[in-house]
Image (cartoon, rainbow, N blue to C red; front, side, top):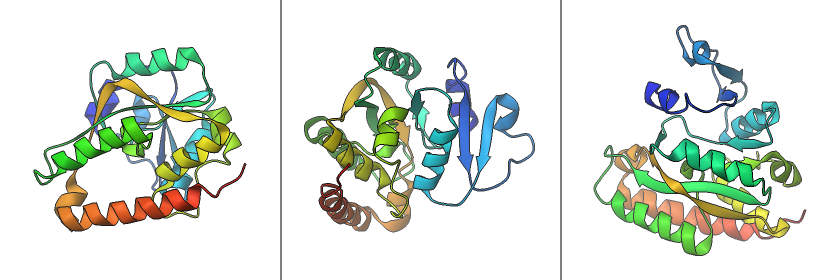
Length: 204
């Protein structure tokens, strides 16, 4: 996990868990108060084992390459204090400068989609109550990708919905650089449409 994110989380008065697929390296963030979990590869599996290990009711799920705006932790703590287990907190998306310029369109589209359609993605930093996670049976481990959108859509069946919080989260755009902006964008839209159709058929 990048040192910048570790520093940004220093003022959180709660346990920090890193769900990994490799043993803890020497001189790692373990020495800075992280619980390092090791298990099978797969984002849904990594998310589920971290949430299961968490002792707190609320869990804030961050990708390792995330960077947070200065007000992020205060915004999350305020959200958790409201203790509404049917809400899923998330931040505004911003792409880092490590991808093509056109990702600014994806960034704008993601924030519009989140606000008007209630469909944020996991790189926007979901804050989830363990009661909701348990009621949904966790993140769907049969999915190789899209477990975040699947979770959001399935949550609607329990009348649980995402809530935009007042912070920005910056994530890497390198996948658009590596695989091509147009190809990646089209692929994401097709996969999202397929996931939404499948998730809507889920029953609690």
